[in-house]
Image (cartoon, rainbow, N blue to C red):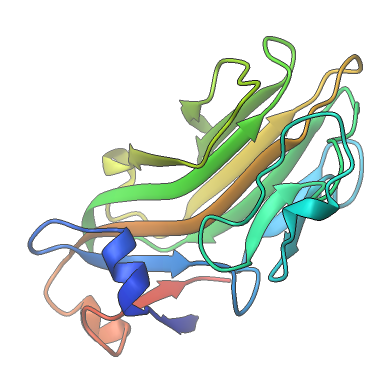
Length: 205
């Protein structure tokens, strides 16, 4: 388990309801947040992490973000080029422990430039799709996304996967994510596991 101190800016970016707290947060500035990149067609695939993102280095044909949503850290599918015409899926995944938590919610800042309907950006939790971008955006912007994970409250193994499916035809800039958070209401004693109630997020690696 790794403990990550939340800055005041991070807390302000993700306001939460009374009684709730952060189970996890990463702005990808200090490290990759514990996420693991894999693919059906390659051991790693297209997902890449950096904490020095500079959109002026992008040399593809799509529309990549000019900067990270906050700071200079983020994850993206081929940071400075277009995603691979793989005919398969590239994954970014991590497993979390929701024991003692209820009302859990996943949120992040999202930038998607993919060639729909052939290429898709989806989020899966324990194998079930919980979010789908679902349309082609030729002029994307950073968007705030929030998805409730109430069906997984209290579970000890909750795998979250960001999945980009690519056809073999046309590629675009792809998918970029920043400031990923999981919030919820901790049961009495759950925050003791975190060590600093109200100011920290935890992640299971």
